[in-house]
Image 1 (cartoon, rainbow, N blue to C red):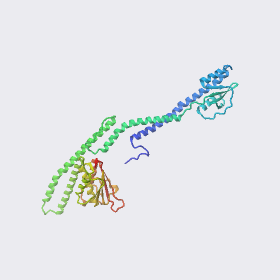
Image 2: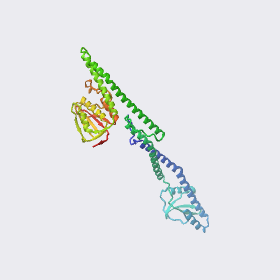
Image 3: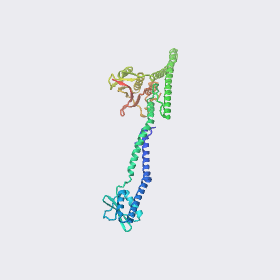
Image 4: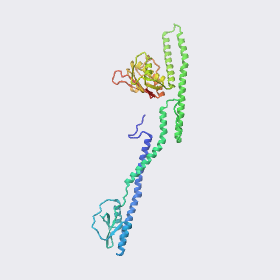
Length: 436
């Protein structure tokens, strides 16, 4: 059963890992930014504002306690070293209305230290604070360019840089893991039990080395198993020919007094056995065959010439179009498909394309729920096949096995949806080296 992926979820392991690491890194960045602001930036800003408020109060107290002649020197010292302007001459200035966080925090700390409301005024590019001290009312000017904390910018920097670092790191790490997995998946998809499959390189981390070694061992064992099966099938089928011939000879030498019905039954059974043996030998020969180059249209015309019934042929490629395929296996697949169409559909037509051959008949069609079953050995469609049609029941099973062995694909649908006889449409697709 195919598992549906969540909407928008990447299909590859690399994409999923990057997405997971990206989301987790963003959450870590957000938590880090909140913690940084709450436990570092905010306390530092509080301390800085409190220290500046203490400096303002201390400056006002010192100014009041100094002799009048020394006050100008003190004012100059504050301006040069602390960027503070202190004056006893009150100016009529508008109120400071900005909500800049450091200035507002400074105002709050001053109010806490003085225990009274402190007004903020704006003028001459300075922020002025009115500080009552003894019998004086002083105005102290501070520069407004106090650096405000920017948690949003901090978060953007942390998230952006963190996501970039995580992305490239995970890209490097996951690619090292997924590259061997992709090779395993590719080899597994291409593997058809052939001996000439390229073994996977047993390098890298221990787990990937173990995976590659197990795959190579499995592929080797399956190849040997399939080779032994094919050899055994061919050997048994060949050896059965001798007793089968003896039985035919014995049947021919029976006296005329033997019941003719019984003889016909024996002959029918022998013919069925002989067809099974021929199919097994053809399959064994096609499964172990090597690819050869030939002209596709001329090759198919030679196959069609072996049938007594005419089969319409439509070629969508030129006659000199050449392909590299296993000829006997390809011939066996086409012969079985055409024979199947003739038996159960009557009229058959072929369409030859560059990488596919389409076989269409005008029979009753194949129900959708049974299309995957027709390639099973000895499966018969109800109502469409009977013992009268003959056949070993292995034709389409051999087609499927040969297609799997050589990496071809076979697809079946109904040729028409509304016609009284929809017919079956088999499409044999192959990937081959072609040339004109």
